[in-house]
Image (cartoon, helix red, strand yellow):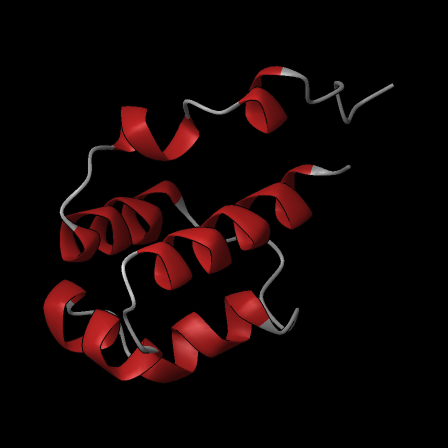
Length: 80
């Protein structure tokens, strides 16, 4: 799996786990709903770390918690 898919899947998992709709995450994080939707639906395949940090803040987790999964630990290097 590539990095974009892993970020998208993690975000979807956290939204479901926290029972948080996109608009609530947008309000809590200060990230526009359109930006969140663009990440989730593939229009934005390279979300910046600042955006991810803001989303984490909105969900009440740290960046470490966001990235501390087996999927991120097992990502292959994308540049060959």
